[in-house]
Image 1: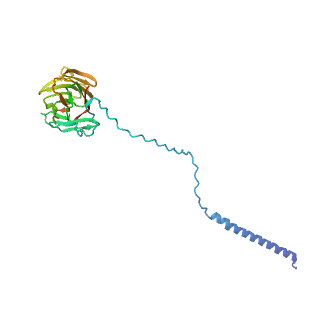
Image 2: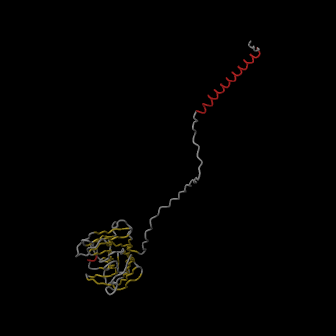
Image 3: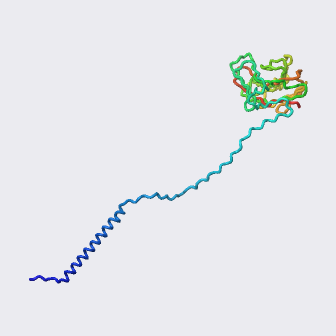
Length: 302
């Protein structure tokens, strides 16, 4: 049987179809290649990290305000010096650092001590003495005296001083005295032949004391006032910082304590015209260090 032959028009159409398919396939391949080489590279290339974005702040505290510095206060000026009495003929508030620099005072000392200090502490005269281990047959005196006889008894005169008993835990056989003595010594006025003495005397067994006034004339001792002891004030009394004023004239003396009359006026029996001031602390043996204070000593003509 003879094969059927195709027409020439059908062959040409087939060739055109095949060519079109080939072109479309090539275009698809090209497009696929471009897509893979361009976008695929971008997908696989790591993105460069930029600066980190700030995180949103929550519950933030306000920035505290810087306080304005306060103005610097002016430096405190030193306290004014006490006013010297206008009518004072002698005065010392012990404001100087060196007690003996001005030659106003002379040190006095008698018998043996374990410890003996005479100096200025916080603007006051301090007399400190310890007697443990010292001789039992001696009474010890430590203090100062005026370099000149500054008290004249021919006319009315006042002699004043602050005496601080300093809250003694044991004031037994302790004495804080103010002597008026016509003679000068570097030991103690207590051994001179003539003097007038006011003192606070410690009362056994403890803290109390009593006031005492005595006189020595030509070596003879006489007690003028002792608060009635031994019939009265057997146990003494509590004392602290005492302002003592002795008002004297040619024949009499009155004791003023803290602005109030304590005794007198009564005859003192002294016949000297001028006197040195002695500030004196006295102790027996075998006592630990004890200290007393004096301040604002002055002599004035009323």
